[in-house]
Structure formats: C-alpha cells, structure tokens
Image 1 (cartoon, rainbow, N blue to C red):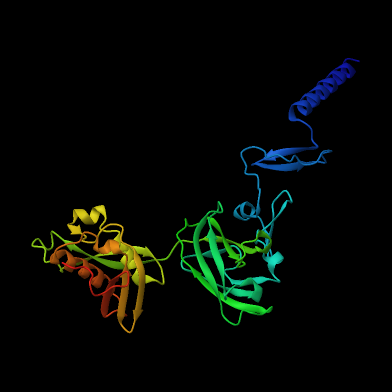
Image 2 (cartoon, rainbow, N blue to C red):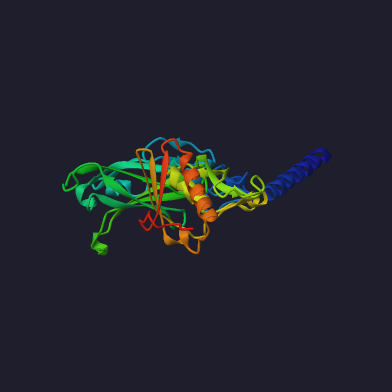
Length: 335
C-alpha cells in the first residue's frame, strides 16, 4: 500500500514538472526568431510573421538579397530568393518596354561604368532629329550630373533601326547607383511626343591620369624672367579631351600648396575657353575677353602666353600654339 502511494506521488510530481517545462518553453508548433530570421518549429497553425525579427536585416530588394549571399537565378532579368522564399527581381529599367523603339548594346543594365563612358546601340529613325538625340546621366536621386548627344551612324530618315554612338564624361561617387537616359529627340517639346530609355548603372572607381600645367615661380625664378614657367602635376579623371582638360586645370590657378612653393599665375580669374582645335601639329585656342582684361606690361603678356603655350606643347600632337580672343589673333594681349 505504501509503495503504491509513493508511485502515485512520483507520477504526480513528474506530471507537474512536465507541465511547468511546457509552459516555460512555449509552444512546440510555432515560428522562432534565430539570427534575425524566422524559423519554423513543428507545424505552426499561423503563417510566417511578415515583420523582421531580432537585429537581422530584412531583405527588401534584389541588391540586398544578392549582397546577403542568397542564390541568384541567372535568368534575365536575374532573380534572387531569400531564405524566406521571397523572390526579388533585378531592376533593368524599361528595356523590355522600349525594345521595339531603341536597344542599347553598351552599357548594359546594372553594368559598372567609368568616365568617359562609351555608349552604343540602335534606335528607330524617328527616335532621332537631325541625326541626334539627347543623352543624360543621373545620380541615384535622379539629378542630372552629365549630358551629351548620341549621333546616328547611318541614314536616320527611316523607320528601321539605325546604329548610334555617344560618349559622356562624368564625375560620380564610386559604388553609387545611377541612371543613363537616352531620350527621344522632341523638337516640338510636346509631352505626348516625349519618350526615353532608362538604363540603371553602377558608378565604378574612375580611372585617372596626370597632366602638367605651367606657372611662373618666385622661388625657382626669383628674378621673374616673364616667359620662364615651371610644371606642376595635376591628377584628373581620364578624358578624351586631354588638352582641353589641361587648360582648364591651368585656368584654375595654383592650389594653396602650390602657392606655398612659389607658383603663381599671370592669367586672370574667370577666363573661359571658347574653342580648342588641334590640327597638323597646331593648337588653336580661343578664349573670351577676360583673358586680356586689364592686362598691361610686356612681361605679364609674355608670362600669360608662356603658361598657355607650354601647357599645350606637353602633348606630342602639338608643335605650335595660336592664341585668339573672340576669334581675334592680331591685336590681342598688347603690352
């Protein structure tokens, strides 16, 4: 009898212990948050919670899914599926919607691009006007950071596809998303005639190159020999218009560090280049009237000419430099 009572008491204690453990441990069939993700335990009656859990990142788009390391299906457009079976499709702009009007070969959607960017493709003849159409590059906030024009590479007065090419130079933060916009030329400016192809791109680390600009220097030439100039190196973003970029760097004048080393410029602030053409070894550069504004004295005139000439003659394609102001060459930069 006593043994039976002991057995009953033990069973009661075990039952109570199991009940307490069950209450404290929560339901077996439920969703649990583990390392920022919802994990199914047993057969929960409800659907997976839609909100995030813990400190884990909630995947919201294709880029985040890709970065998180989830598998990507190499379809077009690409698709990524996270561990919650959510599928995210890569944004390729409106390429499919416009494929019967304009097609782009380079750059492709979501391609990493650097400056200068070469653009090529083909568009129906009515996408052009006078054989061109506008090109814009936008930053991630859809603000314009560069513009250019695409040029037809054949007869454009047709309903057929016509090859085009364009080039655009830009300065943008590496790793940021941007958008290339190829607009239908719309001389009427009527909204109903407007159209565009939108191509998402990623800005890459820009390629750089070095050019020289020439200044007078009070330390290297204390007696100031007027036409004696000295080079400093400037790092610039790679460009096809290298000579023009070198002149633009010259017109900015010496930096604070360069000034501390004795470099000085005899060129007025605010001077603008109106044109630059290099043919048969001769560089013809035309400036606005600011170049000669209140310029006096033969020494300063010689210094200005030397700075411009030597900056251009660093290039192998330039043997001679002709300077003009508003198209005039005869009566400019008079002492």
